[in-house]
Image 1: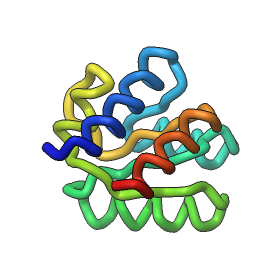
Image 2: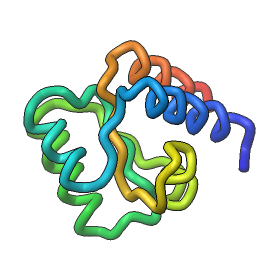
Image 3: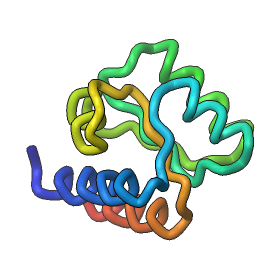
Image 4: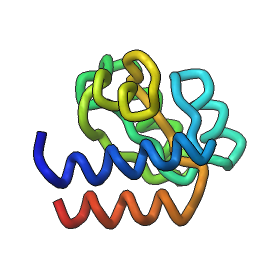
Length: 104
């Protein structure tokens, strides 16, 4: 793992501990459609259907989306099993994560 990867996943983990995330396809999609999602993170090894679903939904609802890490690491950093998608519900945390990605 690269050093920058750790920082992003650490921030996702912090968001999880603060209760500021939704994970799993259904919960993330619901958060995007309800306007609560501030950033969607899709694992790079997610299925094509999952990536297409979130790319389309995020484009329509104007939610930033990034493809990052893998399902195992994404799930692990929030204390769950494999997760193909996670969304951040807090604008400050979402912006901080996007800044880290830009620096990577």
